Length: 164
Image (cartoon, rainbow, N blue to C red; front, side):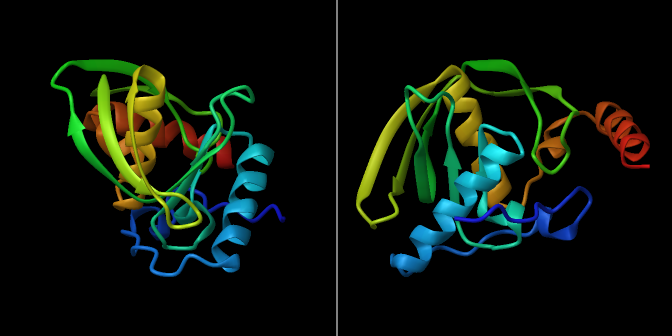
């Protein structure tokens, strides 16, 4: 396992749609291990392969140690509730900056695990927000694109100051 460099905003890779995973092998498991180590070191609760410059549809989340780690390969949201919630979001590619984003309160997601086994789960609240956030990233949608233009511009100005 290795901690890999994380792409920093505004790297174009953060707006690159990811390709489906076709091969479920030891290399995919190593990538998953590296993602987990990188996420924990950042620190964060979720990270996609795109964050480390690997443009495959894979992400990991670990909301707390008790619930454990969950890897999502080729995830697809099959249901999203009309009821919305607002939650504070951020990114390992823009550490330290957060803003409220509105997303569906409940979702159903179909995905494969690292062994290629088909899985499906329902999620609500924070877990649903995290899954939607990471799937957006796999689709090439960086989280600040969900903000109003004014909030996005303010956040980018703050980021530019942080990076200097």
